[in-house]
Amino acid sequence: MKPASTKKNESLISGSIISHMIRLSIPASMGMVFNTLYNLTDIWFAGYISDDALAGLSIAGSVFFLLLSIGIGIQAGASAMIAPGAGRGETHEVKDWVNNVSGLAIGFSVLSFLLGMLAARPLVVLLGAEAHIEPLAMEYLWVTLAGSIGFTLSFGAAGALMALGDTKSNRNALAIGFFANFALNPLFTFGLGLGVTGIALATVVIKLATAFYLLRVLALRLNIKLRPAFDWHRWQILLAQVLPASFNMLTIILGSFITVALIGQFGSEHVAGYTIGLRLEQVLLLPALGLNSAVMAIAGQNMGAGQNLRVAQTFQKSLLIGLAMALVSMPIMYFLSPFMMGLFSTNEAIKNTGVTYLRIDALAFYAYVVLFQSVAVLQAMQKPMFPLYLGIARQLVIPASINYVLIVVWDYPMVSMFYTIVIVVILSAVLAYFYTAREIGRLVQSTLTSKTHRV
Image: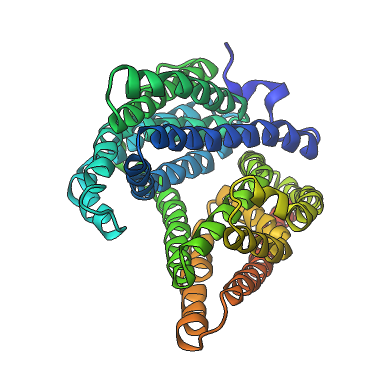
């Protein structure tokens, strides 16, 4: 099998950019759908065990998001470093980065387990686990932390394959994992009587199998034997991409905690309504997130090949495709929100809160798309710090301070928080767009200057 970077039909440095976006984004979006369904399956089976098990799994899941943020950072870092080499056709460089991504993933899994040993229980208690809930939450966390190597390796392999223009393999793995979860959850949980441990064990087994499958696909595509590498110099370069992306994800998680805490001032029913509305919005944003993966791979390969004009075209065309997505999703959020909320609850307070949130936040839908694509291009250009700074301001500092004043100090109604979210997202998208356009402009100008000097 030839190395993936030499396969003409899979090269992202030539041909229609829009065709490449469609080819890559559809499988990526489908994979995210299966991943969402996978998480819902775990919640569903936990509910069959007991209400306490459901509460314990929910709290444990919030803590486990910290590990997932590391995995997402590894995926982004792998894609950012591997795509340029793939674009230049430098197979040896790609192999070296893949091995070091594998080594870094193993290192992070060990670090995650050690930190989990120290911090997991205090975090569970901090999130409100009562005395009878805490053991169930920890039961889930001990197993998943022990098997964290499957999570980190699968994220790293998925990022590497994405950089090579392959989003189908990860989609296949996530789809198979979803169906396998339906078989293993009842087997481990009820058949073997393992309870919450069974749910965690099923996830660990599936993630280890996913990592093995994706690494095997990667090895076959590159025609190599994978050997985790521990080159500190390359690790430093990788960490410069991984850590900002991970911290950016952490700001999203922490910002969500703050928002829920403030909405909680108005009652648990409003928290439930907001949470359901947020999940529905996230489902509608999945195609835009799939496009995000495609843009990062296309821009990264063309960066490596020195085709900076195609990087600019990738950004512009992603915004046009994103606009089409927004024109479809915004009416759905506004007009179908009562129906969608009714599928989850008949409680009027819950439904009204969710509908209100969806209708107001529909105004910011395209702004989210612009943010996603701007971040994707900047990560492909190996400029991850601006998205991190913007994330800290957008997710934490600005909304937390403004909403605290509005809700706690001035006693404004809850709906004012939703308008704050919309305004902050739109302003952030405008800032991200102009910053990204400026960086791309500098890139294109350097190319033109270089050509002029050669002439």
